[in-house]
Length: 197
Length: 192
Image 1 (tube, each protein chain N blue to C red):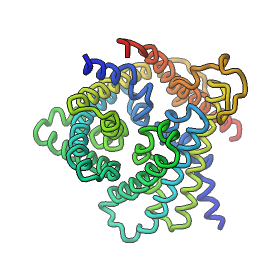
Image 2: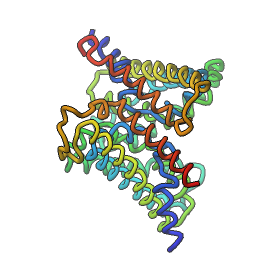
Image 3: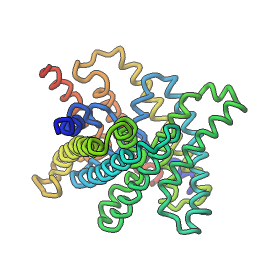
Image 4: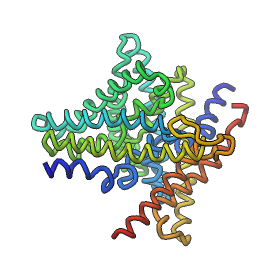
């Protein structure tokens, strides 16, 4: 049980995919211009990551070592296609906002990285827990960037208006705002870490 | 004129790295030296043009007529991975000088999401074959421009006094933000 908890915890802060490992950056910056898009993207990535970790861990004993990467890619792209179609059918607005980044989940380094580094070497339960933890870490980074950018750039959070959007710094919801936010967040995390250690 | 518009929209206005945020891993990963970013740029121009041509043909002549659009994601990524291997073998045998110039960057390209993104985008935008060729040339030229400029800035930054917490990636992100701001200024150019 404690092992499972460890697998779960690792992804959230210590090996946070976005802020610590610097992977999965493209969707993080591109869809974080408001909190709802960020949440939608996190859910899609979580679905794909957990399912692909599950399947990769299940078939790891019968997967030939030489062709494992193409097999992982096929497993991942199957789940990406499923989430792509579900989102297109039930959440057309979100689908339009996320655009090409939904099919691009297939090349998100987090998912292939976890399949190769974790699920291929560990039993089913711990792989699922690793998937859940990693997706939570990704969601945490993505949604906090989304919330910061939406508050500063549009004066709202999850669509609720907090103050007059005419005085908000529009630059924060434009592309440069994404780079600024993540740069300052990383610097803050560096400072925190130095203080704790 | 329309092709000209497509090229410049892809090259400057919707710059793939700084405005659309695709392929950022390589943007931060290989831009520490000017040489490596030039090598990567050539590899991207080469692979992107060929693979978006192949993806366009595959979609319009195989997937679409047989109603297999749902296989798009899986087909494109496997095709591109195989294509990169083929190109590597071909270059090694036929044009060894070019192979040496961009050798190690070719395998890295398989995981470069810009290649796959352009393959999807030319389908989503319903471009004709010629338009999609011009579009992928524009995108890869924009990629090269952004990554080479960024590499020049990063080399200069090594000598600059930077606050301790901002050293490394944080300052790289702030730099990218300023470059992105500059590229935002192209919005509305040529009435696009």
